[in-house]
Length: 247
Ligand code: URA
Image (cartoon, rainbow, N blue to C red; front, side):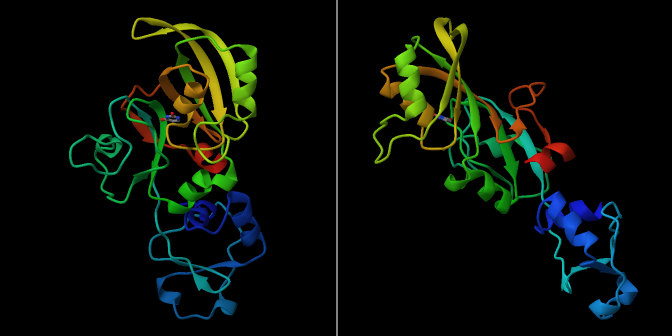
């Protein structure tokens, strides 16, 4: 694996942060027969693209890097599955990630059982925290099929913050009308909604607060990560290097 990716995966920062560490000569390597050598006498690794091989020990400022390999999958969640790692009675999204040896994967955030779309599955707790922590304000983009059309005034309420029965109004959101549509043979209206929070049933409750019913929801993006629409519902794939860098 490339040295910069190795350090990122081990939690030493973003690609550019670890490149900086490398540039400053703070990253060194000892091969199996050199272990025991002191840090000062090791040669710094200067090439971020240098390939780390089995049996080599990498040190940052004299501290050995304990490499933990992380996995990242994008799942197009179908309707009908619960977002959990296990459930006694129901099938979970993790049941779809077949053929994987690791048992420590979990879904990042929660989609309702009847919501479909983008779900990130990983074992990287730090990344999950960065994406979910309320203070990070990571934007989530949804398509919402709604039973009635919203007036301009209602859309403005949606944007400014709504009382959905919680102690605080919802944070500013974005909403845009896309087109007339249908869901389960009912005529309805399609909206694109962007929120920066993740409260329980949030979008459904936001429409409810305006006396509308959200008939169906599909998550299209989370931060920089966009649903790969070539994935059929239930399909998953590894994130690409570029998606990982950007997220
Ligand atoms: N808002 C909802 O109401 N449900 C979801 O699954 C996601 C956002």
